[in-house]
Length: 85
Image (cartoon, rainbow, N blue to C red; front, side):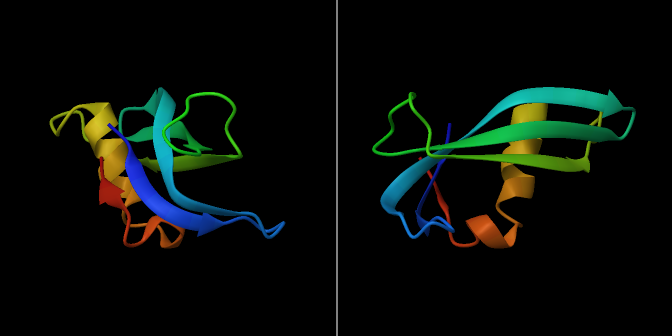
């Protein structure tokens, strides 16, 4: 699973239809988790051109952590309008 969205980095690089993948999920408490997001061009796994770190709520009775991470990611301004792929 990944999200797809065109982004422009602070350095002015535009990646059309870039892939944004959640990785390295860490459950940091009973109600919290942390994860990394790596942005790739054309679905490539290496190299990534941007890395993000997010903290969010975790619901032990909810969907799996990966699904929860992607749902949270879609609520963030950087990924508004991103589509599942």
